[in-house]
Image (cartoon, rainbow, N blue to C red):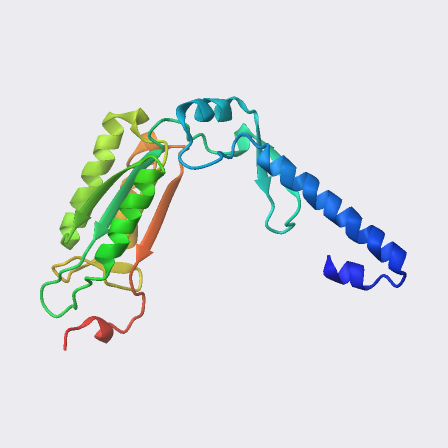
Length: 217
């Protein structure tokens, strides 16, 4: 916008262009505030949540065009509207056997993540200091539970915090497991109750091929 105005030579035309831009921007900001799918504060209260769900149009701000808001129907977005928005599974490996260094700092990350997702109406399950096999068992059992109660989660988030190398992460027994083996627990093939539902995975671990930085001195 600045470059567009700068190229105008005549002062009157430049002034009119600035006013037009401000007017356009102001209208879009009003649209955003009137968007019922965006609560005034999070989490929304029960009445506001019901009002949001009645709105058939979802307005999404296009990051490539800062002042342009596009309208999308509900068929373009995942439906996450239950009182419990979804389930979060956190694996926080801190104390390691053998030569791997402990990761005490990640306790604060796990605490903050639990607080954040609880405020966002997610149910959080956290396990600490799991072996390679223990990580697999925890996620397999969690997926089996989701199968038994199909409506228990509209979204699943998996967060793994540990040491890692390449495409693998360490259990506290210093054994490696492929990340894909862990995420596959929530695949549609292994947990078809999650079909059509969003699944997010976050990994906090090194991926370098050099493991020397993990070792105790």
